[in-house]
Image (cartoon, rainbow, N blue to C red; front, top):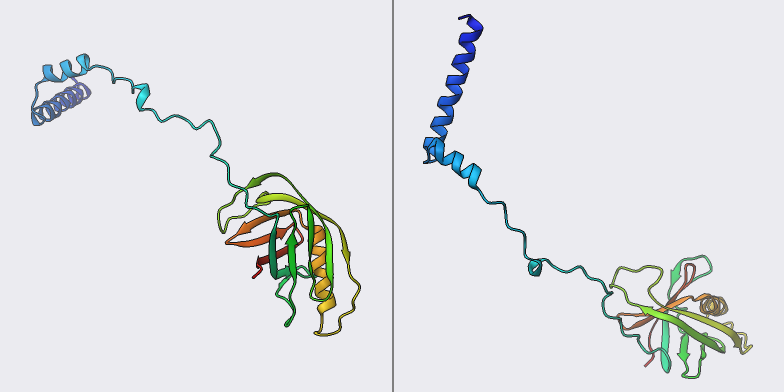
Length: 195
C-alpha cells in the first residue's frame, strides 16, 4: 500500500475513534445515535391559539378637548422674525372662543373679534413628540380690531400686529399640559387658562 493509502486509512480510523469517544462520553452507543436520528419526531406545530393576533384596528380615539366657551391668556408667540417671545411687560393678550363660532380678545391695546371654525378629527400626541397633524384643524377669519393707538409701553403695537397675524395664520390647535397651542408652520401662540 502506498503512503497516501496509509494516510487515508489512518485518518478514517482516527475519525472513527473520535466519534466512538464522543458517543461514549454522551452515554450512548452507535446504535442509540442512529435510532435517535432516524426515529426523532418532527417538531409539533405551534397551536393557533398561542399565536398573538395582529392588530387590525386603530387604537381607541382620543377625546377632543372643548375649545368653545374657553378663555386664555397668551404667554408666548411668534414674532415677525420667526423667533418666540413673551409679552411686552405690563400688557395682557387674551383669546376667547365663543360657543357660537366667534373669537374675541384683547391685544394689549385694542379689542378684536372674528370667527373661528374647527374641522376634522382631533389627533392626539405624546408629550414632547409633536408632528404636523397634532390636534385639530382650525381657521380664524374676519378679524376686526378697534382703532386705539397705544404708545406705552413700548412695542405694544408691534405685539398687537404679530398676535393678529398669528391668529389669522393658525392652522392647528391642541391642548398641551393644560395650555392652548395655536400654530402653523410659521406661527405659534401658547396661552394658559385665563383666571
